[in-house]
Length: 203
Image (tube, rainbow, N blue to C red; front, top):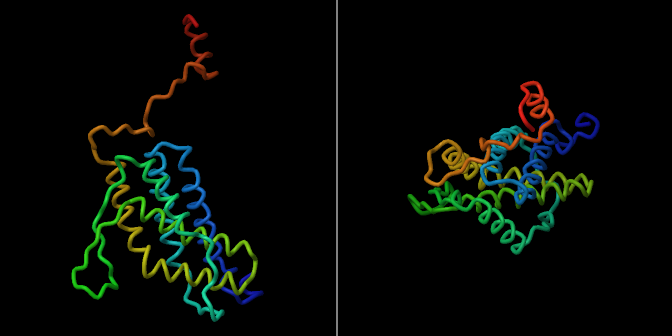
């Protein structure tokens, strides 16, 4: 389709990025349905792919004179951020982040894990919404703004977030219960019942 339209919005790299962005948004929107470490385990797999696909989008220009209209509000941001904070609980950490564009030397700030998750979700959910409108000029500028935000804002934060996720998943943290490896109750599984029958166990 890229060859037919000449537009970056239908290019392979753009479509793949939007696809991964959609999966990220679905993960955030489903956070209530999974334990914290399951959520972090999914994020561990999606975030590197998201970074890769964003980095592969070629350079291109805006076509509209005004920024595209966003639908994600401050109240939406606060709601999503609070949901993530509540889910992560003991894994809602703060980590140091240095703004590469700050005019102040060694300007290091602390940001939370949930803040970075939410910032990324904000840009990606707006992108998905604007892509669904099907207007090629709006899609173009929505993609341009999202790529710009990746390069100048949340791309570096995403890398810091991945480090925190790695620590959460693989470090021995006091009180940590890893739902990924909890023993499942398999007594009612058909294969378990069949094995009991073969062994002559009482059911």
